[in-house]
Length: 485
Image 1 (cartoon, rainbow, N blue to C red):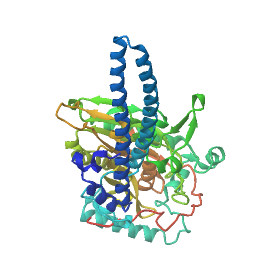
Image 2 (tube, rainbow, N blue to C red):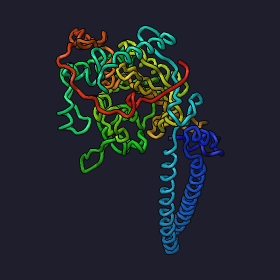
Image 3 (cartoon, helix red, strand yellow):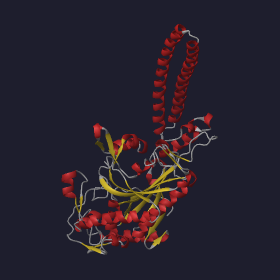
Image 4 (cartoon, rainbow, N blue to C red):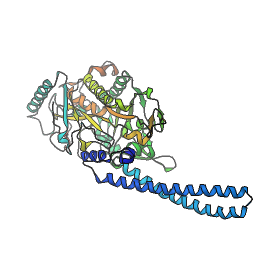
């Protein structure tokens, strides 16, 4: 959450900074004044409780003096008065605590300060494409290669049935089915909508992506972490925004009927890894490669990406998570994006990088990039990577401080937290299947071969027979973007 002192002019804060950020997010500006009023109300309640405590302390001194002077009867009268004051103090403290809880809940509802470089817009049609990469070129060359690929797609699909591919140009779910690499029917039967079993080639490719992703980040001095799959509510509530509780998170019952939440990304448990700790500045940057199975309801995704395993309730993911010095967090943001770019370049997957508009930022992010890979059957780009600088928004809620508070400092220093997908492996697998298919099977990307016993090619086992599910739009509901190429 934001620093409460941003709302306090007497503490050097400037509420107008928050108002301007809210305008950029197309959120409520009035909430800033509501918070200022609630803060003043809480401070007044706390002052009243503190004053009552001073009265009790002063009375206690009188009682002590009377007891020492042998005037026990007079002291007893004052003791009764002290009991009344104590009850009044407890009531005032309870009132102040209620006001404090409401205040900080309201502060937590406001998103992070939007970075000045973000495009201010409420539609993702204005997302800015800042670069493109194709295996044989970047910039204008990438543009030409994309146009060539789309022209080939249109020509190839002219004689195909609606929603189905042709030799060498099938959708990822058709390719996976022809490899006999998954079983969606039995998955749906057992787990429900979007359930699936990965089999043989599908499982081998997925595990190869997991191992390659961990080694890739390990070589870049990331500490590998396998995280818990569920979290206590007290910690999940400090790292996930409220909307996620209903739209994304599954709940499970733990011991003594306590509610826990299945994680939607390893970012969530890793963000709390150093909760309530003081870190040394010399430790920065703390770089973690998180591996986990992730669980998402996808409640707001009805009808989107129904094909195959691109958007599912359970998937594996390798996540970059970094805690660093605030002075170096924007430099780290670019470095983490480059890690993701290098990973997909090593696999030979065409992609573009998009800067996300202000309205589409989640509460924690001050700025976010998406890396979107090209899917040749659909002729469009789809998100594989989300890369965010959350500055001190999460670490303040989780009390992840550093350096120690010095005598002349009025505020604690919080580390900056950043997260960036390396690979949600099932999604990356979908992209590999479309980009590396041939009429006879699928070429295994070179970096994955050492994790698949040297396999270079996987032949098809079945003829194409999967009917495509309906998508919400001709390009599978992909987000549009514009900007410099």
